[in-house]
Image (cartoon, rainbow, N blue to C red; front, side, top):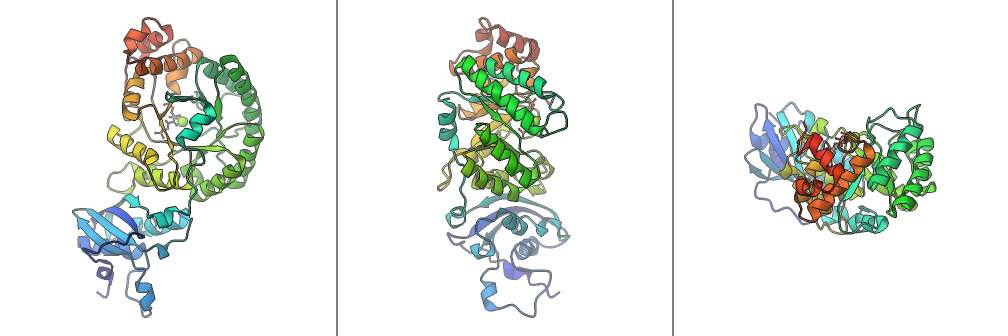
Length: 415
Ligand code: CAP
Ligand code: MG
């Protein structure tokens, strides 16, 4: 056959410092690993299925190069000229586009992307970073707490505001809309925002603690811009965006808008598991977390290792490092641990994350036998106990809300 895929294979090639590197897991379908790797490099850079009558010499310079094959792991170096500065959708259309549909492969997974500073420098990254968020909320030496009113959707504005009051006065720092709560006909966005912000001010006065609202602006992009502006007008610190369902282009637009509005971004990753959980095919959360930090979210869900969602402790630790590690000029991202959490799991979470984590418990607060206010108190008591090095059971002797939570859930790891 006249294929030229092996022209994209140069084992032993030393990638240049300013090349972008992709690490793929490749399962060929009836062809050699070398040819399969060459096809991935070709289709994700300049090639197609056959040789071409016209291929100027200078274009050969931007061909991607397979430089390492180790078992089913393939490493490919990409000259930066392949990518438009600051354009995440275009990057993904290249390194995470057609290649997943090629018949020559049975499976393909993009495990990681190593971005050179030459590429990263075009992105703002997080506006606030962990220190900036702590500064705004005046919370220094403990994890932040969040709760999502449950049932996820259904409350009207007044009921929602009641839950917000109970949660915030019970000790919750951040009230978070659920990922599928936006502006349904029984709880329109601005009505909810206006009422909850009034409650926020009252709860701050009542508790002497800063409180904030992770208000979900997820919608069509122009509508999100309108909602972000409203959030700033009402004096809130955050917007929440479902970054996978809204898409990378929208997130880049919202990030720019939030720079002007001085709003932090809470990134929810709903739908990621459609393409991240299959170990043989799709895209690793390594890539999603790196892209979210590049674009500039301030908080990012990374899993629990002990809760109801997939994602073992090892993965959660790795994603947390990707949020918080030194990465050129980019500020760190606050990792969010959420999904089946309750007071009985707080020691596991603090053991896994340390204190630079946002602990979100929805059912684990509103499912408390004595209700939301007690559930919020129990969550804070579990954090206090753990930071003092006291067992939850010991601390529960003097703290009834924690005792009642432990009587219901113990240290259950829900599925
Ligand atoms: C958690 C949650 C979050 C999940 C998302 C939910 O509620 O609100 O959306 O944590 O998963 O709807 O399930 P509970 P992840 O606290 O009641 O479990 O954080 O893994 O992206
Ligand atoms: Mg949710």
